[in-house]
Length: 509
Ligand code: TEU
Image (tube, rainbow, N blue to C red; front, top):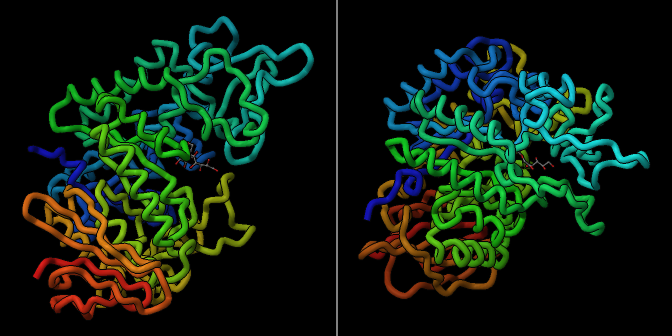
């Protein structure tokens, strides 16, 4: 049995504005990422997902793309990208880039042309509807972020255009074959340059109801993009999958399917002929409680495994409050790290979570994002100096406690959460059972979880205490501790009890 690299990999998401700044303008860039590859290789991740760095007016900080095939000058040049890719590959780090297929920027030349009038050949690259005579909107769909209608009137033509996000992000019309072909070409552009794959932004939103029917009134206040679930999308995904699979080297697409039911997410794997992987957000929204996670794990594996679909796990990204902030405190973040890195499926880390970073407290006057997501997008503190390793005032304030909670200080401390992540990553990499073994539940106390991962005759057990109390968690047979959230127990025999919020990875003795 061979396993594609992306099933064995741990991914690390880089939000390039805030990762590392090589040119000193206060905004991170591609050369900054290249300068920190040795750190990422030392940490022990296998692949990077880099959020958008394409030409953009930055109304949605890069998720409004004005040219899919060029680097925004803020981040560098195509030559910088090629250098970064080569340097990453030289360290055995794969690179996935962020493809934004459901909408463009209103400054993309396609939209500029479409806007010229109803007769323009590019008009139907986007979704237009006449203004209803009674002055109402084409339908009741809502945009994300601002809670406004998903339609904006184009004064010149008297028609509305559809935008599932900002009005500066018009939705593409994928039923138009010219659009599908042009977007396929953007994939080929980067595949030919050597990228290992794509994270596909709100990819479930590329197919649309041709009737543009209203959503039922009781759910109509939910943004359209969280409701759109269409057969048309699956046909597009099969074409995209065939395009990727025709390239050598197991190129991969992980889709952002922002539908909040795992059963719906599962459909986007098709018969292993659509997405290679999909994000599944219900666990991200779940509280850090044993019973809730047991259900999330059972539901996810129960729905995905029978169809040969490979799960993903994610606790933080550039759209949500960081999990250290949501869960509250480092002890919980340490337990969450053990959970994330020992489940069956591909984990996605969000830059800085390995330092236990919390959201920055961004004062009103410095808030920039229309979706209110500045806190989780704060620049990474690389050291404890006043500018945290950035050589100019950075574009957003830093996360709290940067004098101590930074890369340099944590690397020097064997008991830091960073060192815990590193040990977990090394342990996972060395263990086929942890990377791809079946997951079987073991008996656990209330407020605890215990499971084993099994591949061939290799076995690893994981025990987690989701409570403020010391709990007994006896297992059958003797085990040695491989990784301990409290570090101290490693190498010794498992005692059969766990301290508050303690978690351990165990090996049969
Ligand atoms: O996000 C999609 C999305 O629907 C949400 O995560 C979004 O943040 C939420 O609906 C707001 O309340 C993706 C990207 O991850 C996000 O950064 C982009 O802004 C968005 O698509 C548009 O491209």
